[in-house]
Image (cartoon, rainbow over the protein chains, first blue to last red):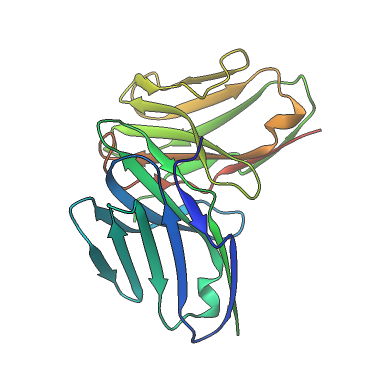
Length: 111
Length: 114
């Protein structure tokens, strides 16, 4: 079962534009993480936001978390062709040991 | 920079054969995870170890899958017998501790069952 659901499933933008991906989840969480996966490779951790945080930045990445709506968004500013990848949100549920991944958003950045 | 190692990177086998995957986590990481990722989907946890103990194997098909981490370091995931539906990417990850910490993934083993 997958706790997180990403939206949209796929996104195609021009280089230089911003890309926004959303993640909704079902149960209370300790933290939410975003990962990137280039085609056929392992996942790379991008950013972690804890349940008591509302916004976090890392370079061109901005993550928001709204625990009342059980949702998060990932914004990539000034996108580059190298940002082409799949992006997954992953939630660590409260009181549990398990991190559950969503189905991902496939981002394609056209040069 | 320390990385999670996995081998083999690719494996082609026929159904009913046995296959095994190996993972060496980042040194000092107590927690090790095996995930299965079907094309177009997110990773699904198969088994999670804390040192040599299994923390969660609720999604591991125990009739054909087995996993071990005997000395609390590297780990092996085995499938016997393999079925067509087992074709997927098998990802290993490790983290410092259970639950909240960032997971570091290896490159994965892509399995094709014919």
